[in-house]
Length: 273
Picture 1 (cartoon, one colour):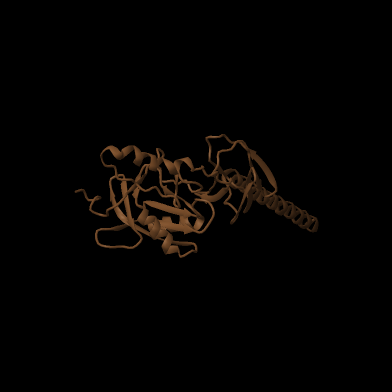
Picture 2 (cartoon, rainbow, N blue to C red):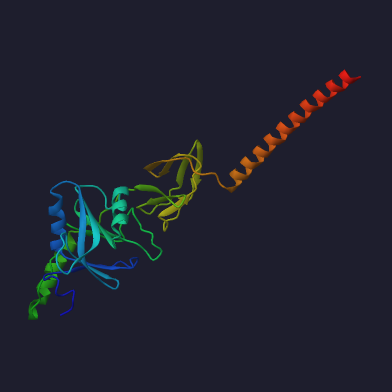
């Protein structure tokens, strides 16, 4: 029996979209624990399990022997499946491998890519929490009926269409703008009274922007987001211009001092005549 197999009995489901560098294994019992821990209000906590290579088995919301903290979770009563700024802050502080977000009847996992960045506005793949599938044991010739039972939930499944939403945050001096639904609507950026339009493509979900003020409004379609922060430091060109202005002021000051000195010298020469 493998190390993973000894951790728990019962059904185990896999989250492994092609974009994810990690394979996540979890159970319906874990989803119930997360929902119960929230008690009908928004909540967050730690996920315990084990990691073997690129596979992570999530087991419980409470620590016990043989388990280690490998993730965090956020459970919300309603809304979309995404990482809020607070969720991302807790994720970074915990140095976790994976974050689970459950919102209403939908859930999703969030992981970092090979470069260390994370897609915060949407999960690579969402799953249903309300209609978690239950595996059916198959014995002998009864397998066609079991297969039919598994297909029944699929007949009534309707894909969720998330509402377009924007997330704006600053990283390494650049504003990172993310949206959760494919669109070709242009980005509209209002930065200190100056308006800029940025075209987008269907396969695009992020953009970066170097802001010039401390108050930036971003919009795409019907979604809007605002960033308020300190003034950005001057860039190389602005520093060069400031240096030129300083030198120009010194030159003007020296010229004024020279003219004043010449006037004083002329007055002294007239007195000596």
